[in-house]
Length: 350
Ligand code: GLY
Ligand code: MN
Image 1: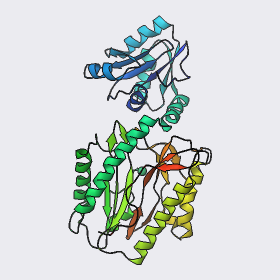
Image 2: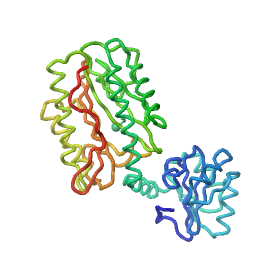
Image 3: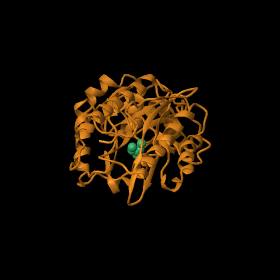
Image 4: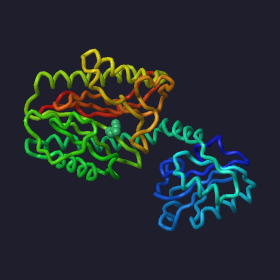
């Protein structure tokens, strides 16, 4: 295992069941499987659908055909005189109950193990950063294309479908999450679902979407206008942009997540829109769309660390009027951050 877990000892083994952590530790992705880590060896159990691919891709574990997992684990535990097994707390209760009953060792769901994996996953290697950037470049190419597609009369759903079609065409392995496209009054709902509403002149359109490359996700949001904007729309847009840029100026290793959030929130509060910024400022991104850390108000125990990738996505949402969100991904460094997002942020009026 390239990433040694201190939880594994002579007497204690670790069983990784969640697909995201199995993927992280072995480099091999499968919907079902078990990764057993012991002091002597690592075993990846997968069923017949995955055996060949796993043998090629999971270079740091012995790949075994999954048959009866309890019997297979018990055999290893006997051979290695294992006494205890730790599993992640994210497993459902039926998995935990089954293992507890069927295994000859003491089974515990370990919050410390889960936290350690989250912390490890939050610091990206350069290969992981390259995957996130590759995903982001795909999303940006789709953004360039969407600017030529958007016009009065096309629907939110058509815009979402076009973005997804373009991302797939440009090499995305899937979508980071359900694409959000909201326009006009709908844009005051930060995570609204695209509808059949046609775009009208004077609408803001918020598009929040991401691509996938090498298993890693990207996340970006842009808000564009169609036809014209009011003074209020202009003011809100520029306030969000200022807030978003304030975060870029302050984030670096050592500042707290609360301080990063405050940089954005302060700008929006000073402009009088504080109550309309209704979510946290950002989150980690990697194999999952929401990872550690969480840039939220008052989160002062957690400090940012070099190598983390976080989103920076303040927004202002005026109910029954419109909303604006702008989102980039930032790679935290020792003395500042690198913006991984290159798409235009000045207000685009189509
Ligand atoms: N961009 C989707 C999210 O952050 O939840
Ligand atoms: Mn996001």
